Image (cartoon, rainbow, N blue to C red; front, top):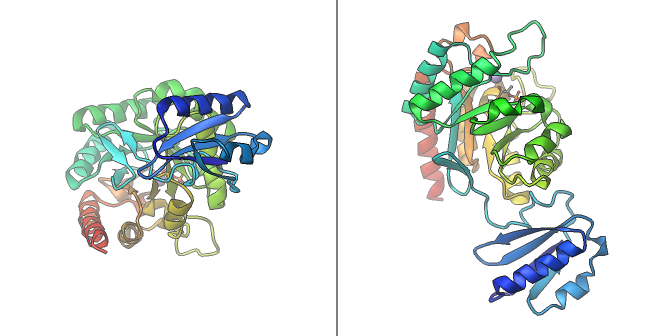
Length: 335
Ligand code: PEP
Ligand code: MN
């Protein structure tokens, strides 16, 4: 349920109403938009008398929200959320470019890639330290050492770092990580999501391989319900019958999620296609349809990458993609 407040409502009046709603056992989400101030009521709103609420002097209108996701709902927060990450941001016009290797492999590798992606225009460095691999015999990542190497690269380049968490017990290792990634395979690991909701870290939440957009938003809701509103959504391709690509990129997720939610939406064309030469056209399409950013795998020696070499771009190819993405973004702005 949302209560749209009349213009001219004082802080004291907002506080009083908030206290009353909380006394009914509900949580309140306050959104000061450019046009309206909105109180979002979260919890069992059945016990709230909507007519009584609407009759209050300071309340302009009351609406019930039919969608099961509340905090993530655009109706609760009409303006785009802008998630700050170090000295950069995602959402509301701020475009994020997260780039780096699938897995952190060595100091030389991560440093070389970090320098190259920064020079090409990346705003964040990505790299897997804990890797969710289909086979238990495949490289599982450098784990804590991998995070240390990412932090070294952050120190040298100034790029904030994005890396995946697979187990809430590892959270202490993520203290200096700027964005914690929840991978596709963990999108519905609700205990992990709840733990991340208790932090204030920006969370990059990747869509599950076979999950609907509503399920993605419900997973965001798990994080937000715990008090962490810093969620970035990521479409990374879903399973279909197609086999030429690793997954099928669902680009309609971008405008749809923007309609449904105020959270930023980024596209990962690397995992979506699994094919390096398809990354550029999909990145351009993502920019054209309004994505708030990209996550792209880049490797200094894709042929010898320990993970996902076939979809990894060389630093030069990445620089070419980013230059083209910038042209598309400028063209789209003029529309
Ligand atoms: C990744 O980004 O390294 C990754 C494993 O992605 P996903 O969870 O989308 O498969
Ligand atoms: Mn990968």
